[in-house]
Image (cartoon, rainbow, N blue to C red; front, side, top):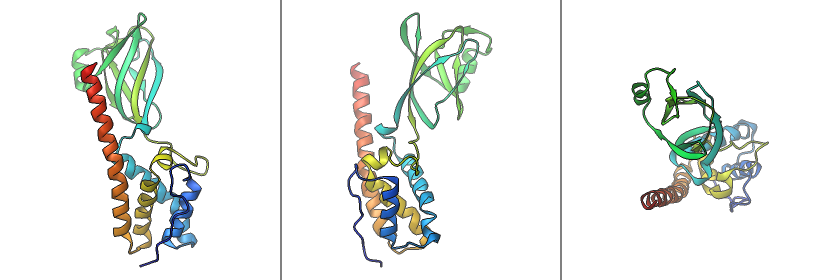
Length: 218
């Protein structure tokens, strides 16, 4: 088993894309191009793995836009993952647009030419929503959603994960790397990664419980 090396960055404010690459090299004790050229891909895979397991506050975003009259299809924001809620403004009043299944919308308003103030929305496909009834005028709207974090790269040195969960990023990247280099430290990295992810998942559960409590009290 290779000797353990202390990572060069151990706190959330210190990790960057470049420092993560160096830390991975130190842990693996590999500087050959066959491995170092693959590290950006290991980082990308780790980001996707973490994103599939958690929905952090850092991924929660609010977008504002305008529904177009006579068009029931609305483009989703870039890197959209999951919608939390939507509301629109009609006659100066904010009102909710309720999430329903696509089939429900089609049954509620079979013809897209029937217009009115949208009451419901659904996923039309991965890149678009659909509302029903079709907007009878332009409506400003606001949507709360989870997004995929901006991926790390030379041009984007930090994101929410490097700032708030550097241990998850480090050990998640190492787990991806050892599958490639056939390193014998998988059990160690797996344990460290699972410990970091458990903390993030507990934070997710607490936020969800807080959100439900607020909804009940509101």
